[in-house]
Amino acid sequence: MATLVPPSPATAVTPPAAGSGAAAVEPQKADYLNLPCPIPYEEIHREALMSLKPEHFEGMRFDFTKGLNQKFSLSHSVMMGPTEIPSQSSETIKIPTAHYEFGANYIDPKLMLFGRVLTDGRVNARLKCDLTDNLTLKGNAQLTNEPHMSHGMFNFDYKGSDYRTQFQLGNGALFGASYIQSVTPNLSLGGEVFWAGQHRKSGIGYAARYNTDKMVATGQVASTGMVALSYVQKVSEKVSLASDFMYNYMSRDVTASFGYDYILRQCRLRGKIDSNGVVAALLEERFNMGLNFLLSAEIDHQKKDYKFGFGLTVGE
Image 1 (tube, helix red, strand yellow):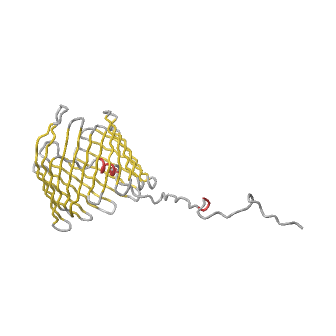
Image 2 (image 1 turned 180 degrees about the vertical axis):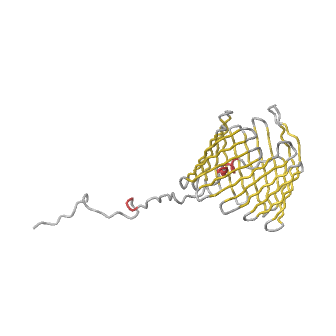
Image 3 (image 1 turned 60 degrees about the vertical axis):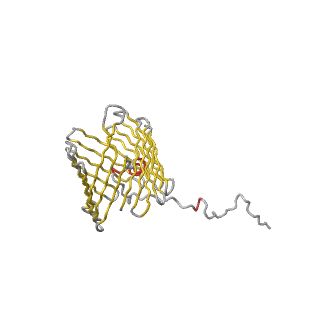
């Protein structure tokens, strides 16, 4: 009578354990028919610019904004500090200046108007109007007493499901158009063309942007000789590191910079250092609701140019 022999460990069949590779969840496939809408072509370096090129100033500034109702507000600004004068020497020439600026703002969900008048005769205006849910009109203009310095420009921005296109029209026979398309959920590619009739110049450019929840990498090249690369790494919810590389193969100018953006509960600190030896930092401290203190510093060791400024902002 044959005896039953238990199977050897080599031939025994065991069911796959829970959580093993056989039962692992496959990565989710990208839905190429439902890609996100990219940001506008002109804003592909947005995150890097916010960290590396904040609005530095020199001297003293005071800004006061008073809301008259939910949509309309008035602003007053006083700026006192030196102004740089172009010179052929390597030394920087500055003269003391002071300006007062009066502004009016109208903000509506579909229409925004901003106007500024300065004591030196300059008038600035900006417009943003949502003509439809997908079509937006943007405009900006500046009028000044100096000859050939006044300008104006209109932009028509159309937002599609997974693309954006923009057409620009400005004085001096300036025409431009750009298009950017989402290729994958994280990658978008775009291009632009422009024609400046007054200066008889034209150009074409291309750009790529790759972004995730933790990083943003962009690259841009144009026939004018400009090559721009930027990278932003989000270390945490409060800390971001940024770097960029600018190269002009016409003039052979090269600049690289590295910066940081640190957001705390009551303040925001941004700083950078570049390959030209320029070190800059901007501190925005919130003392109370509607009361902010600004501290700006920029040091150019090569040109021996040192800029320091402080300001106070009242109102929202």
